[in-house]
Image (cartoon, rainbow, N blue to C red; front, side, top):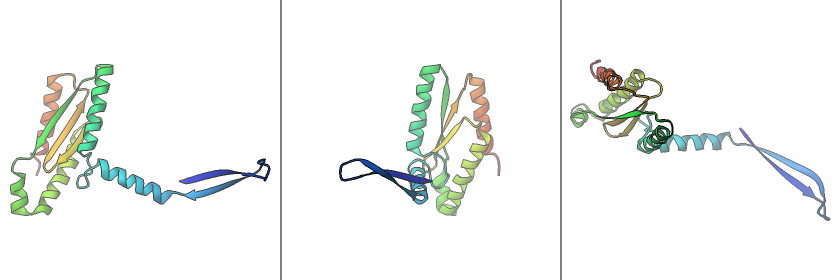
Length: 150
């Protein structure tokens, strides 16, 4: 990407006599902005939306729901005894578990769903367009099946 700056050149009587255009490569600046944006709204370990981004997503779903009567469900997921995994097998192993879980959750959920890591071993899932308890229970079953895999 480039930034173009155009300036008018005036003579001593303040009459326009020319234009000067300067182009500047802003690739590095854009890359830094994108990196900062990513750091602000995504968890670095799992690449999932973080708590800040989750709150924004929830606001969007609530607003959309009010306007168009669309329903959604939120699920809170916490890994029991995760501290024991970190303590007995090390933080590297715990981090690997969280990363794999994030990938599996994204794989099992439909594209409109959002999975966010809000801290430690806690995740929140937003399921849009849930129109029945049966559909919700089916999706919860799919999520629980992720934990059955080796």
